[in-house]
Image (cartoon, rainbow, N blue to C red; front, side, top):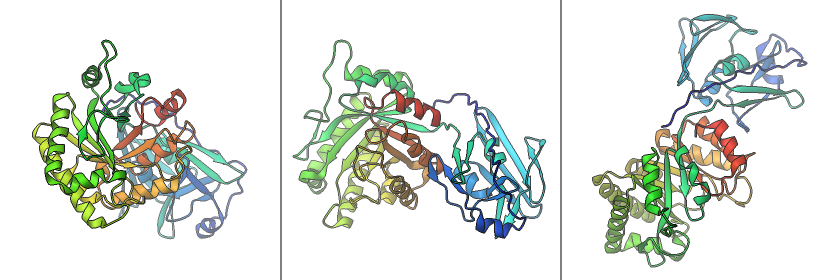
Length: 415
């Protein structure tokens, strides 16, 4: 993982003009109507945020977890401890219930309002707490909305590189891994590196597909061979049901990836389980991935499996089993509707939450399509990956990112 020093400016939230609510915290919770947006999407809380003496108070554990902060509660001492490590150093904050004094890395800092309990939930001053951990906070008086921009995060990044991507080849070193979409399973169910959309590129003078792969690896970016197919003509179904064909396919994929200098295999086999026996399809695909993973690991290759989200129409993917067989899974957080506009945040959010019920967050990567997203929407999707502390993000694709979106992405995640 490529790491850089982080310089994070702490912005204080001003809520001047907001009428102070009564000290009765139960009444404050019921009447405040304060909304919290984290990276452009609502952040749910077990107890509604409140404004007390001009200070926005939020549930401690919920805001901590959303910002990736480790939290501890000492019941006997009534103390809240929060800590986070990054390349700039470790930040430790200790708050005490009912006390307006906080301890930050050993020093004392005064609070406008002391932490307190509302309906059994510990509430803390938002501006102080988020500011200590590098979040940017702003207030909209008209809508009573607090907007939080999470700190820039160093997380795993994978980029997709397919036909027409060479215009952004210079971005390859910015990613931890690149999946090169130069192969597929064709209409007859055969693995191939020729064809129409997903094929091995032709050399252009001294620039060859092999040189791009080797340059990526030399620069510290792991190259993956991406294998694409869709079950539109039942080509995947044919491969899953024909064991001899399947063995040939798996051997050809592993041999190609190994001989061409790739470090891993990314399987993008789409369209399974739209109709028919979903359990049967899942079992067959699990068997396919198991065989491929075993062969891949014998030659030192990692395996990434790219999947439709669990709230899509395609039900042929057993996340729980695939999460055990593969090194990681990419949730395709796109193609929910019209791909010419940003994907619906609630659907992407739901897709992540469903996946987390089946697979640990350390193995989940959120796929984001910049064909759908733009400079105004892409960081909201990245923000969801950060909010749930997923392994990372996968960007479809180089060649269509563009400088405006790239600039915004660079503000949210280390690239």
